[in-house]
Image (cartoon, rainbow, N blue to C red; front, side, top):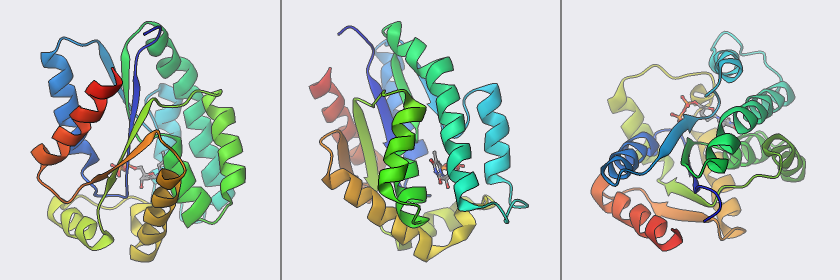
Amino acid sequence: MDRGLFITFEGIDGCGKSTQIGLLTDWLEKRKADFVLVREPGGTPVGEKIRTILLDKENDGMSPVAELLLFEAARAQIVSERIRPALCEGRYVICDRFFDSTYAYQGVARNLGTDLVNGLNRMAAGGLEPDLTFFLDISVDESFKRRRSRAIEDDRIELLGRDFQNKVRGGYLEAAKASQRIKTVDASGTPEEIFNIIKGYITERE
Ligand code: TYD
């Protein structure tokens, strides 16, 4: 392999991404694999500042286009500052959300248009695409149950409610249908069951 493997995790809020990312990084550590873990939006000093603006509940008047461009701005920064250099050094990069989030949240759920979002995604990522994307799919009802049990305060996007999350899920299902790279994983099972599926896809791809 001339560059490291780029793996991204996607899903509606409360789908269990953090648990799966934790299991994956534990597994990579045991295998002594060299990896970096990043998240979107954020992952760089500039990106973390943009994250604060994006998730701040006080910014409820933010226009959807401003929101889209801020996500893309944070992405352009993390791709050039962290993701591309790490991949060039042959490391694995695990990213908690990447441009499929923008497709589902802004392109579909915010209805800004998938062609527009695909174009901006390509621009911000400088043509880079993940090698593997895990879309952890659960129902909106189940995700709300999990979010309630977490008892963490909702951010600006999470506050948008069930209809919005349903549209986001629809966006992911649509994206997954059109791409071999995106693996839809039923996220209603136990963490171990879900991780076994993920591990299977990774070892197949290595
Ligand atoms: P975060 O706290 O990281 O949520 P999670 O733990 O669910 O990943 O907040 C990121 C929020 O931003 C989340 O609601 C999804 C949303 N988002 C978009 O709307 N568009 C994007 O392009 C990205 C990367 C995230």
